Image (cartoon, rainbow, N blue to C red):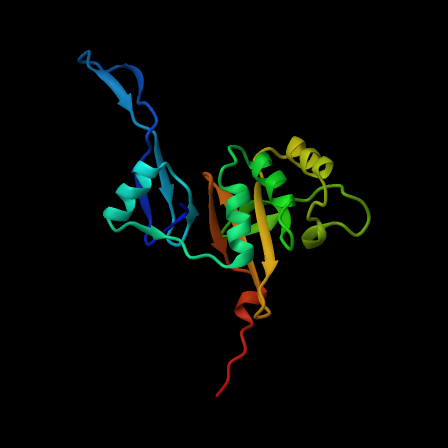
Length: 178
């Protein structure tokens, strides 16, 4: 099942704890793996963790549109940003990008993809381009965008194995009727 978070939360995953060494008093320092999720972030966890988060009221089963459901099915099981980007290439109607956070904004990573392919036209089109981009900037994260039937763009970044919606330029241009 795919879940959607209702609020920001940090939760312990089911992975084994790591002993990092002793404290001054001789007791062990134990770190439990945790994941942080933002409000409205979409993710897939183990059934036990999903049930716990839903029971706590932190998350709910996600109701996703066609393209978003296809994107989530393709990329939520990826373990690395490059793997998520490559999985997103197979989703019809979704444009995959590579992005980094600059201040409060997510921006495409500049890459030498040829004439006329800088800035917002720098989405990658095949596996070789994606691999070349991540070779030059491994800190980049996949950004996926698509148009909705209502005429505005939606964009999601892949982070921590989840999808978080980010604002787009077109999402603020909604028609207001009196």
